[in-house]
Length: 185
Image 1 (spheres, helix red, strand yellow):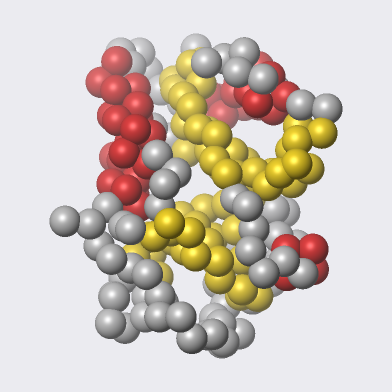
Image 2: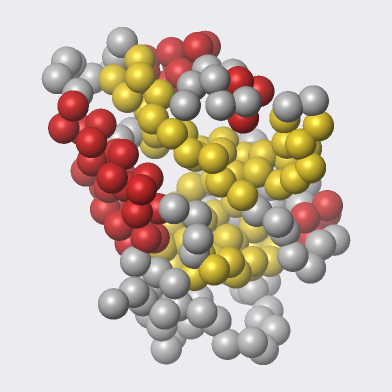
């Protein structure tokens, strides 16, 4: 049975929350956080936005996810591209790229946890790690299928793996516009 992690409807003040040790720039990572003691720990998406004013101006973000496995000579790369419409000239006006190592066992584990939740909480932080808001989404992002693809990539990969080189190859070989156009599907 999925974990019902829907937050109570009252407005929460998240300003007391700060994350340290975040990578520079914008991006997304998964973290385990307790937002509500009644629910307990859950997997959340931490969206790092150095200039969050535009996101804060919206009551709700139309958040979408495009995911896939990129094959490189150095190993597979899981890409998760979180995007907000509209799409202009084949590219979303706002997007955040998250790459993960599908050969790393914790990748499958975090995806399992996210897939087993009824809701996904997206915690928006600024560049200092200060939480500025939390968005809640019904969990319809397809994490069961993403996890299955990760598990399949781990089974299928037979060569030596170097994730740093695989990530570099992914960044050189795969273009965001082509990902959105479905050229790698």
